[in-house]
Image (cartoon, rainbow, N blue to C red):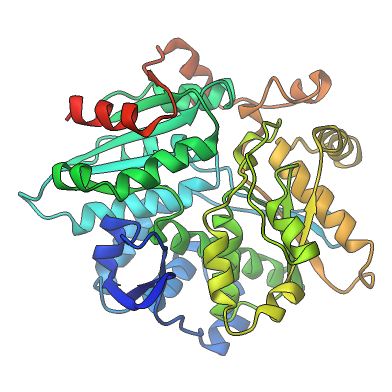
Amino acid sequence: MKLYSTNNPLHQVTLKEALFNSMPQDKGLYMPAAVPRLNENFLTNLDNYTLPEIAFHVAQHLLGDDIPAEDLKDIIRDAINFYAPVVELEENVYVLELFHGPSLAFKDFGARFMSRLMGYFLEEGEKQLDVLVATSGDTGGAVALGFLGVPNTRVTILYPKGKVSGIQELQLTTNGQNVRAVEVDGTFDDCQALVKQAFTDPELNEKFRLTSANSINIARLIPQTFYYFNAYAQLLKMGKNKVAFSVPSGNFGNLGAGILAWKMGLPVCHFIAATNVNDTVPEFLRTGAYQPKPSVQTISNAMDVGNPSNWVRIQDMFKDSPEQLAKLVSGFSFTDEEDLEAIERLHSYYNYVACPHTAIAWQALKDWQQDQPTGRVAGVFLSTAHPCKFPDVLPAHVAGAVKIPEHVENLHSKTKQAVSLGKDFAGFKKYLLDNA
């Protein structure tokens, strides 16, 4: 597999180089040099395959011969060992539940696959791998559990002080071993900027072997395509072959993965980019002007991103046909008040408890469906996190209906371990050098 930089298509690297370097020195992002279109027979018969079988088929076509078939199957069996069911709420309204992994978030797909891939390519005697990751909520927990105990790796998670939920913070800060947490007095965008600056700092790159577990790493996006294919397979079993996905969006890796699946041939009719008031992308889709802005704190904290990194990848996939992007993707944004109303309605209409990110995706789907011919397209909204992560956000009577997994209850008996830093790069660089 060859990958190029979005800032320089002539700069191409191997999968291993993109995996371990994460981000080109020209500050672009890596993309596959070739996106294979899957066999039509496979696509029309997806309902005959299990999630691991689908994941193997998709990964093998993307990665080529970089990993032998049996090794790739072992990686997938170990990484994707949980399910992602499509649940019908009403006619043509379905929820894709992506919170059944160990960290109770969709990012388990990317973090677990990527950590196993890195473990596979790490060779004995190589320099320790330092994984830097910024999180607005769920990424950190997924990465922490994905890399916990992986030999010859060390993970540093940066998260914005006071802007993640209590459960999310415990998932970030109570692991120990090879995982450490840094509480940044700033926003997610500040955390992400620190990570990006570290990758282009000569002294840090000389001292450490740095890589990222954020969705700027292409190895995060590839496994996220798996659940789009698997969702379509489940819909085929229900007699549905026309589908639209509503995707709660922050850094836009999730939507980017969906569009990558579409580029590989998945017959998706439409994508809906659902955001909170951090509406840089919906505004762009409405006006054609892309204007990043400082992020605003909301109750859907994992989507509090004002300058989403992966939008570069999405635009790159449409560089030859920008008008097609506007036809394929619609944008919707919602306030906290509208988000809470959606949580209430989901519980009232369907007796379904959703996290604030999921509720935004549902409301965006319902709004989009109002302008579509009835009965034609199955709408699927992505549920990206277990509602137990947001007890302080959910209305009391809704929160009371949440079933809390035992391993989440056990987090409360653990002690937070985190270093507090400002948002200046000099302070972060000093911390890394002092704790080498």
